[in-house]
Image 1 (cartoon, each protein chain N blue to C red):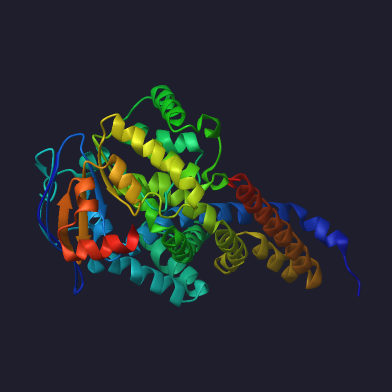
Image 2: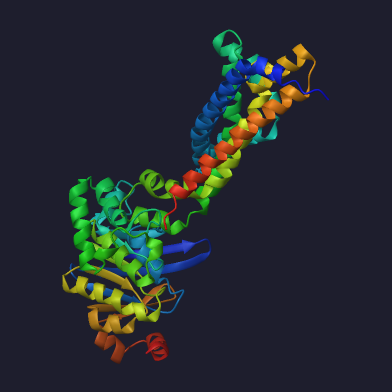
Length: 240
Length: 218
């Protein structure tokens, strides 16, 4: 579903991603872990070209999105993204936040979009917040709305960029619960996170990144209990 | 000092028509200046240096030369070139709009650039084009944020419209000068139009304040 080949990314002189090769299958949940500065977020942001890539290829459902002829807006409409800082639209009510993209990008009728938005709000447990403005919500609520907003486009896969890192500890659980449910429903997911518990419980595969490389990847229990690489061991010994 | 209210009363119809023209000039200037200012702001923010250069030059010229000189150039140069004859009102609207656009463009630019870059990213990640993201996400937020400085520009424009009296556009200041010349009076005409200008600017700022409150999201 997602295939990354020889991905390199430099910011000026700084080579952030050195040679990334990954494949994500349909309905797979891939969790990306690693120390800060490893290139995890950049890697994720390259998958929908929010960051331009320096060289290499990225295929989404066999379409080479790095090809200049590809309509990136069309690809992005099918790849949901959830950000660390939520990035809800503060000038719109919650319901409008969720309805906007389906109406403007997919030209869904207003009534249909509204019905779908309300369903999604129910799914993330925030029906009563439909008419609230984002500023009045807690961090956990904002992130659940952000997930609902991404789901409203009916994406084929979802990217999560440290979705719980900006949250107070007591709100992490409610967001992870929504993500777990999504995984259960069969969503293809790539999740950059520091939540090792989530990685272990929900991940089909864990990638450990460091210094712009994927140092090690494995099934979570195996990776956490028997890391092969020294760098993985050193990292895990600090976070577990 | 003998303050002659009766003379002011005699001139009331002229002050009324002058007020209407001042409002008209200002309204046209605000409207055209805002639209043009937005275009220039977006133009100046283009990544390609060569494409943005004309917009940079535009702002440089209209901010860097006196409005009065611009009014004279438009009145004696540009308008006759286009219309074949001079027209104070048309020249006034053009000069005021072009000048205001330069300042308003910078106000827009600062507003747009103050919006967190995550907003654009979130919009693009949902599949919106750059233009859609601008229209539905960035500009509404930027507009809300720039309302106070925009209000300043509108008020400045309204007051600057007095300069077009010099090209015989019969607005408020023009009629005050006429009255002063006819009766050899200073206080009556100029205090009268000061009061009218004050009422106009206060009303304008009240409108802007109301807009601000209406756009509040809490």
